[in-house]
View: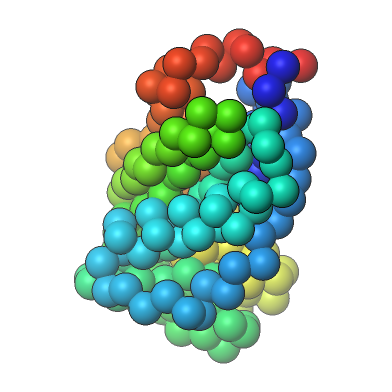
Length: 195
């Protein structure tokens, strides 16, 4: 079986893969994301996902390497992980009662065949109205500091999401339907990676 390598330190992405029977080899990329300046969210996440996968790929002569990156875009502004609690609180002030588009870039590199695929999944997320006390309490948990867009749908942040339009798992960090399609496009079946 071809090893499946996740070029990401995200525990949420690892859990999603494990949930569907794929036990990835986790090799977080050391690519410096601050080097990349793009104003188009789709271009940004696709390029970051590619750079992460490319950084790890030389370590494996025979593997499937997956890179991912996510950002939230609201009113033309792109948000990754907040730098600190103050930034997370300010962001929630803007997000509450509004919607944003969660972009996740997905890259698969097959080091056996030297083939690669790049795809982006976009999911619209509607946030509930929140008062300052709820925002501060949520940020105080530390959860928003670990996530693109300052919320974890699968955590306490799920309480403050009214609805989503599109792929649920994409908001967590990896679109499972898109992964299945990308594997098919590379000539594999998802069941080839079950453990």
